[in-house]
Length: 162
Image (cartoon, rainbow, N blue to C red; front, side, top):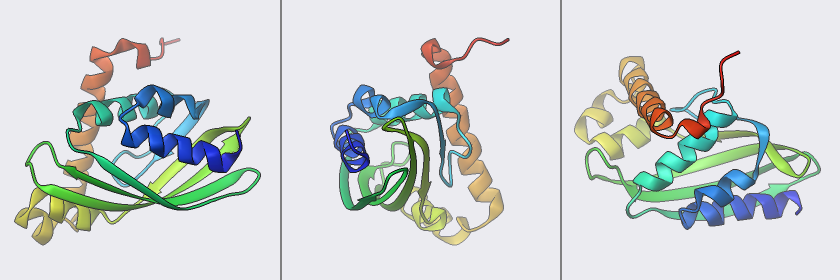
């Protein structure tokens, strides 16, 4: 599978809430980062997609602007969903960059406007205060706490401690 096909397969699977196919596009040593989930290792990244697809009720993913070279790639993807905590509608516009190794994604970085997202997901408080480090750090801490709980409930993602 070439790198363009890998990106397309990943986001097609995401739109179908097929976390296993998403994970199959990731290298065993993948890293992931975005404005909320920063610096995830392979187990955390795979668990995050599993958690997000399991929690989404009305997710719609639109992929565009896919480009890939020998070892890198990028795309834009739009996510439409109801934020589970508030029920508010979200349209998140994300730019993703990738590095590939052995035909799989080894590094995945998503970029989006966290202030814009917080305004949609949290409402007035997000619109007024979503730009502040305090609110953004609270969003990150809540998300990482949810991921940690999910991983504890699904221990296959936890790496044994050496």
